[in-house]
Image (cartoon, rainbow, N blue to C red; front, side):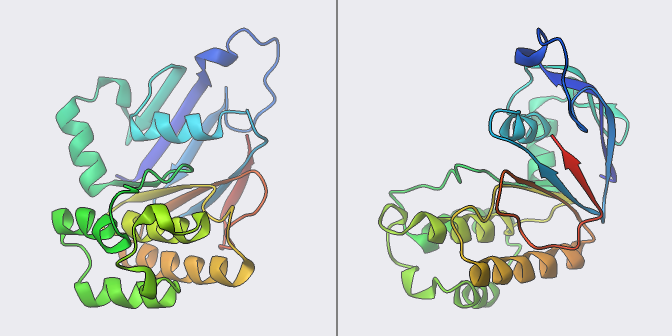
Amino acid sequence: MNNITLRQTLPEVFAGRNEVHSEVWHQTVEWCKGEIYLVEAQSGTGKSSLCSYIYGYRNDYQGIIDFDGENIRHNTVKQWVELRRHSLSMMFQELRLFTELTVWENIQLKNQLTHHLSKKQVEEYLEQLGIAEKRNILVAHISFGQQQRVALLRALCQPFDYIFLDEPVSHLDKKNAEIMAEILMAEVKKQGAGVIVTSIGSRLDLPYTKTFRL
């Protein structure tokens, strides 16, 4: 997938508003593979909704979202499965980890399906992220900042044309956020992928092509 295009897209819940001041909603916006974008937002402006629309979890919006010129509303379940397996990766704001499983089990649950990263590479990333000693600890028993690092690594356990990260560093200090950025960029460069990051405050330090105000 080379392009994601929003055409006059707007959450249905916003439809009754007299005016919507946004560089994304009710605009024509194109995101290209290989570029890095930041979507800055205030709470309640539809940031997480945007990610869910593009990932196909929700369709309560007006307008059109295209992948390479094809309206995603027409996608079948099978097409979404293939897109999420090979083209789209997502790090959700709420992370969606399995808290009853360990750090290692959460990562391997996905990596065993894709076989995208070697065991050695996963272990190296755990070391870099400072959570190697937590690998056999239940996710429920580690901090949210540590969980964010697990969620990033899990999101990297697949091939992708685009990766979305919804507030990925909200609970991280500057040093750990920098490490996360380095690991992300290494994988993005390998795949020539596009990156879309959302933020309501702390941002991932990346070489952004363009910033949009939601």
